[in-house]
Image (cartoon, rainbow, N blue to C red; front, side, top):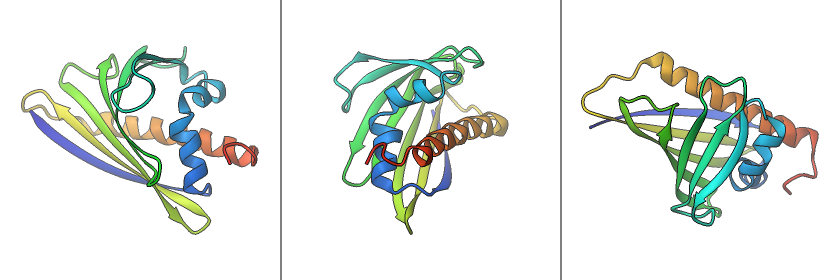
Amino acid sequence: MGVLTYETEYASVIPPARLYNALVLDADNLIPKIAPQAVKTVEILEGDGGVGTIKKVSFGEGSEYSYVKHKVEGIDKDNFVYNYSLIEGDAISDKIEKISYEIKLVASGSGSIIKNISHYHTKGDVEIKEEHVKAGKERAHGLFKLIENHLVANPDAYN
């Protein structure tokens, strides 16, 4: 099994605590409300929302995929860090065992920097196509921008 790692950073005008509340702690409720075309539902299959929880994310009508399952690997509310893995679903090819993510929010001026590290755990010695990774990054960035725009438009939300 190989592991390929990719890192991305995004700047946000939203402070880390507020962004973490929306992006991590309430994402299962918020994203289907503000982006139903992207995510239709999120349901907890096992656990209580904390570490070890398994969630099924069903995608909206316009998505090329139908669902994925996430496993929560770590939640650090004090340091604004969230770790999870995609462990199943049609967004994961038969060449990938899982994709693990670490999201960390860091204060930057009056806003924050979102640092995202992705680890693609491949089956065997498989090469991941750059366009596959790029497409995933673009979807993640688009979803992040929707959340950020929602917070800018609703300044009292998630304070």
